[in-house]
Image (cartoon, rainbow, N blue to C red; front, side, top):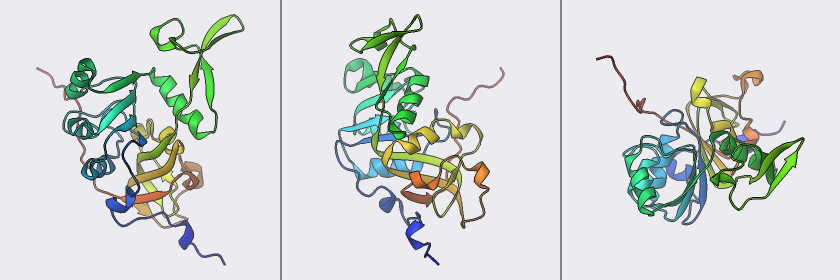
Length: 235
């Protein structure tokens, strides 16, 4: 019988989880707003103090939480995202030219990550054709419609947050916290997942697994803050 020890992806600390992150690296981060973000892995990246980072994420957290911590400490050189969101510091740095920003249509960003994880170097999409998004990119016409060529995205590190996992790194996301996490998980050279609960192998229904463990290199259980990005109440 083969030992399972070689398939156990669990690590004991966030320091181990983020080992190998260096200056100038690219890392992709799951989440949408503050929903489903790997907040503790981001905090560890901030603690490590690595600089000139390129971040791929739907947005960049808020001023004092999530990826906003890395913006505040000026560790990010370039951001590939679909919108600025509720982060005033992100907006300020972008308008002041203090950080490079590549704004990408949301669906295109998701497909760039998915394609990168699938080994597809580029793909054609109609989204963005005829706009500034398509400037400098090859275009083509298929079946009477114009398309722009988009390069896929890959990262040195991919950071994701899941609800439940087994020791092998098979992941299940919870409801809308799934968002960009499955695409991000496949796009990293090293994929690190933090989860709410880790169970022994065999306890997860294979039909319910969203990210197979083959994509996950490191796994850690954490505790999380259920923050609300923007609270709206009746007058």
